[in-house]
Image 1 (spheres, rainbow, N blue to C red):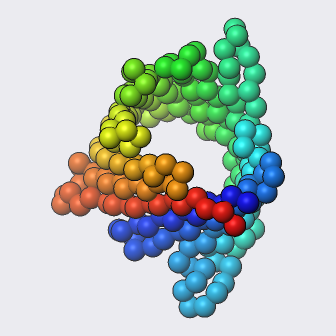
Image 2 (image 1 turned 60 degrees about the horizontal axis):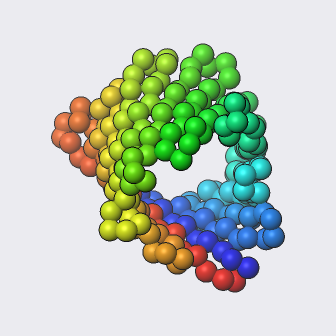
Length: 212
């Protein structure tokens, strides 16, 4: 069976999260732990379990909080274009989110995200230029604000991405190095331009694929 181990380390918080996913036929089984699970002896703190059938459903269970999160996916045709729909419900806070992405072609798609009862909707347009550079402006209706993202493939399959959030003045830079079939690693740095002093936050994430 194929398995994936993903580890994310937050330099600012000096904390890590590790997730092990195993392919079991048509579904994936996942288990995640944090520092809190191991420090001061094994415990259920930070433990999360999940099962996923890609493209159909995902169920996550936060063990210490006894909280379930459901996610269901489906695709329908609208004027002969695929519309990818996602329904997300968190049991603990009774929060429901609807997400839809209309794919016009390989270079253009529009998505909308709405949390029921919030009165808010987030809209995003994605454009891929010559299969290399991706532009993604997004608009938050409630905040009346724009966010921007630009990513570009470099050195083959590596991806360099820059983001900017106008409301928080957060500027981010992300580099993803793809290691072909063995996995990838990613480094993310962000800084709030409105803060003094301007101290960057850094996270590192690695993903490894292997056989079990």
